[in-house]
Image (cartoon, rainbow, N blue to C red; front, side, top):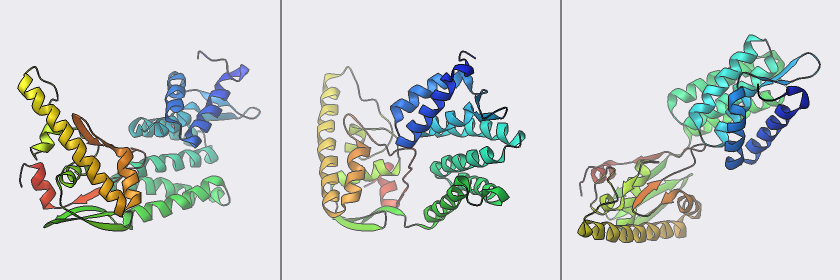
Length: 284
């Protein structure tokens, strides 16, 4: 194994993993993940002769905390197999709840349905009443219903004004170049756009470096213009909608390459209209 379970090293590592996940410490979670990853098949020492939790469960926690949802899902299915085959209903319920959390974070309808199936399995377990897992399952159902029927986030151009809605609050702002650029970024979370592409009002990933001095000058001018325009747009939004302003201040990256990068653990989806799609295709 590389660790001696008898000396408690592995047990201390999983305690640290729990703490990192609870605190949302992405850096610590990444470090612990690398230490535990070779030992996914191991079990932490339990009480008496009963085996403890699987390391795969803690790997799922750590991957989710560091924002890597696909590895988190894979590790948790591994843990689910370990505990369900062994008939360990308490740990099976705990893993199902964590798996449901990861699936809900993915944000798509298919993942949501799978999350609800895991939650339902926990609630159908007769031993769940009054347990932490049972209470968590109830909370996850409420979260799934809230996300499914909640007010959508919207960025929509209507003539000379933009309607922007976020977390149930709406503001209306006069059209500017910065809002047009911002709408493109919101339309494609995590996708990178060169500042030059945004200046030219068409989408696509373009290289931001060149050996041509004239083009280099154009790229630098685009960087300055787009950065100024985006910062101005975010400041105007913040004045009317402080919560959205705070969100954009930490998720919009500017420079030669620009992007909207929300936390993958808390995905944010935006509805846009044909005007924004026209901008992405190089329209008006």
